[in-house]
Each structure stands twice: as structure tokens, then as C-alpha cells.
View 1 (spheres, helix red, strand yellow):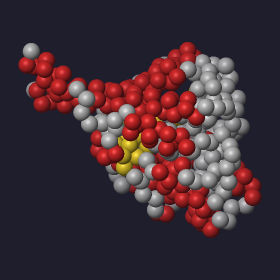
View 2 (spheres, one colour; view 1 turned 90 degrees about the vertical axis):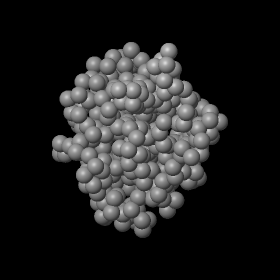
View 3 (cartoon, rainbow, N blue to C red; view 1 turned 120 degrees about the vertical axis):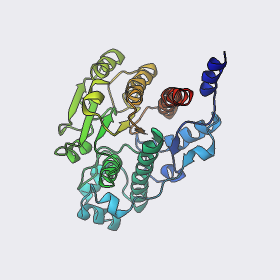
Length: 328
């Protein structure tokens, strides 16, 4: 009974098992009337507090420095952003009202994903309430994305020799065209995208592995495609860190898509991606990416489920390992 009691003690609720990166500045930027609901960030933060996550578990990001942004983005593009020098067509491609506040939001979002990556390398897991702006290219932004936060975080960890290889597991509704282009000729990054094929972006640069689904596809096809490849690609590529873009937009009631995933199907998606990585002791960085349900509460519920799945996975695999290490 003594050994069983010790084991149970490791599974009793203690502190939240990883850090969550969040800034109240995320939802204050004026983005006009469109399907991008920045207030989902605040709503998710408030729900987590109500569920008992302590404020000490949240880390506030710092804006990314120019030297980090320039690891991915061109000096000319960064100068245009900071000076307000985008052409009308370049600004229109972002699909959000361009302003200095939007640039500050983008720079802070990059800083948030960088901090999340550092925390994941230390603790095995971290969540960024934000991030996942995968349509940003080195020299331009598009599709609500100004700067590619995940790409910058990968390049920064690589430059600092914290990692040798990284995998980007992109489960947003839309193909991660910017990320695919950025890492196209870099063998230390594996880019995976499972997305709806018959929607934006019209031009899809090839990722390392792309899975294109079609309008009307739901849980069964989506989950079968994931299970056919995970954890096999983890074992084959052996990344030192996994960036998971946990988009809520494959949801059946999303305004921008035609996939028909249920909330339960999306939870199973999260479980496959996150648990598969943690079983192999791969650190996981979760960024929220897209989510455009007509009712923002649906989007928030999906993101909350992702964090709950991550919490369960981290407790299970981290605490069991710790128990057997200390017991033996």
C-alpha cells in the first residue's frame, strides 16, 4: 500500500504543470470588424483563472528584438513595418487594419512564442495564448499574419544551439504557406500541415509533409490521417522540439472553413499530437493559431480543451517518469 500511496500522490492535483504565456495587450489592438476575434485571448485567460490556474503560472512576454525578427524576416520588410511604409496592396494582404498598434501586437506575439519555446525546453511543455501566425513570409504578411512567430522561435533556438532539429505540426484549417516557404531548404526543420485543400491560400508552397482534406471531411478522415503518420514521423525525424499550431478552425461551425470536425474530434487531434510527442520526451510548444466560429465561445472552448489535454499529458508522462526515477 505504501508504494501505491506514493504513486497516487504524484497524480493528486498540485500546481499547474507548465507555464502559459499571455499579455492583455493581445486583445486591445484595434483590428476592425472581421472574423479574427482577438478577444478570444482574454476570454481564454479569464476561463483559466476561473478554473483555478494561478496568476503565477502565467508569464508576460517581452517584445521580440529586431535581431531575432531578422533571423527570418528581411530588413526591408521590417523597416516598412516600423515606418508604416507598406504599400496599399501589402497592407491589404494582411487583411487587418494596418497600424503601429498592429505591428506592436505582432512583435509581442513573436516574443511570446520565443518565451514559450524556452519554457518548453526547460519543462517539456508550454502554451502561448496567441501565436501561430503561419501565413507571414520573410518579405510580406498576409492572412491576419504580420510576422511568423514560430519560424523566429525555431531560428533563435537553432542559433543559440539549444536545438538541432525542430518540427512544426500545423493543424490549423489553412495550410501554413509562410512557414513552408521559410523552411523549404532547411533540413533541420520538418514542416507538417494538415489542412483544407480547397480554400485559402490558393498557392500552397510544399511543406515537408502536406495532407490536404476537402470540404465536408470530418472527424473520421482527419483523425485517420493523423494516426497514420503520428508518432511515426516523430520517431523518424526525432525533433528536439515540437511547435504545435492547435488551430480551432477545423471546427464544423467555423466561418472560414468547410471541415466538419466536432469538439470531441478536435480533442482527439490534440491528444494524438501532444501525447505522441511527450511519450517520446519531445518538448511541446502550443500556439493557438486560428479560430473563427460565429460564436467566439466555441473557439474559446476548443482552445481550452487543447490546454486541458496538454495538462493531462504533461502530468501523466512527467510525473510517472519522476516517480520511477525517485522510487528506483
